[in-house]
Amino acid sequence: MLRVEHECELTEKHEDVLFLSDRSFFQKVLDALHYLIMASDKNPGARKYLRSRASIISEKRRHLRNYRYILHPFSMLRLSWDITMILTITLLLLTVPYHAAFEISKRSHNWTIFKNFLLFLCCLDINVNFMTGYFETMHHIVVMEPKKIMKRYMTYGTFFSDLLGSLPTDIAFVKIWQEYAVTRELMSLMCGFRAFSLASYMDKVASEYNTPMALYEVCIVIFWLIIAFQWQSCFYWLVPIATTSLSLPERPGNDSWIHEFNLWEESKSRQYLSSLLRALTVFLSSGFLHKKPKNEADLALIIILQILGTLTIWILIVRVKQLFKGANSSKIKYQDIMAQLKQYMKHRQLPYPTQYRIKAYYEFCFQQRYFREIEILNTLSIYMRQEISMHACRKLVENVTFFKNLPLSLLARIVALLKSEIFLTNDVIVRANQPGDCMYFIASGTVAIYTSTGKEICHLEDGAYFGEIALVMPDERRVASVIAIEICELYRLDRADFARTIHPYPMLWEEIKKIAIKRHERTTILNTQ
Image (cartoon, rainbow, N blue to C red; front, side, top):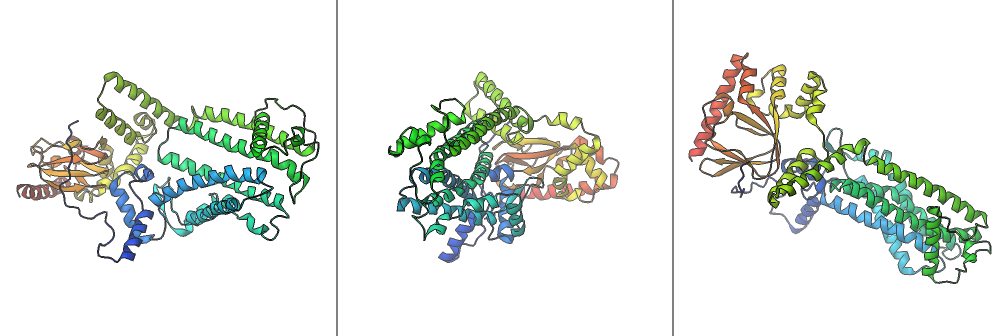
């Protein structure tokens, strides 16, 4: 594929500048905040789902026009907030149980402030979720209506678990702070309900950054095992204390495992490590316990956690199997293909820029999922194939002036002739003064138009078209060069296919020819200036 390095020569038309420059300082601050809550091409999710710069700009304008105070799901502020909440909830799940168990006798003032600050962020997160739109995969649109956002979050989201996990339970014990210390710390463990939203945030961020599935599965399992062992360790220390007294912490009875190892007077680190060892032993059913539990609370806790440990092992086995079958098969196949591609490029000793472009092509073409489209389409009826083609390409063809009056049956036949092509950045799609035999429709991406003298005259974006003169003027050469300035998905319509389809409609043919000739004359005049 021929390539050139595109250096934009056009004066910025401010199509992405949505605010006026002559505004007060306060208004400029508000404008900057609006930029943060709108879709951004720096957000990986925007490029993944909206796919092109023109779509992102269109989404910004729709957002600013209709939903000015709603947070866009593909904004930089939302991405930053998701990452912040992952860190916040992780800190909660790691630190709160530890302090509830091993610092129960004397809670520091600094820890109380820090813990409630984290819970304040969690409460703020609920409000942020009520103000954030969502991407509807079925219709491929971003929904930003407040009522729909609220309904989805409360019905299908994690609202109720978020609410329970964000409650500042310390407020209920302000007047009886020391008298019911054990109950106070048990109530603080309600933050564990936040684990559901944490899992949701991590899946979302991993999906937007296209994290390799196998790597993500391994990391997420390790992460949740760390959280689980942390909570189990704290439960082993806290349950004997809670069964002894729900008010002030007292030394457990002689039948407790804590008394068995004389841990009550030991250092906090020794107490924690002993509890962690017990948690690992029971969870993995390794039989490392020195003696059988002597009281009912300890025995019940061991039984419950051994059952959970056994279930966890089976769940891990099932998750590993899911890597190789079911809904993830296309992702795994894509990773296999990419591994083969890397080995092939290494074998051919291709230069790094070429390798980068090939990988970019595959990533854009398959979107992290590999499938054989031709084989799939061949299994469908001709009517199903026409329906799929019309769904994908009809809007593109309807934007062309001389196609607007075509009968629906003829339009469907033309759409069926379109062939998808992907061009990488700086690829030369059409070269001036070369014979033309097809026209192109832009599904996504941006191209630059150059005159035969090398002057850049305009950009074309999603829904635009070029090269239609070649359909009706066989001997005419291209009057302009067209270069991709980002990864573009185009649909090509060949002249031979078009002529064969339109031949039974001579009046339409003459009308289309007149429109094309008029556009050719305008282009020729512009080319001579």
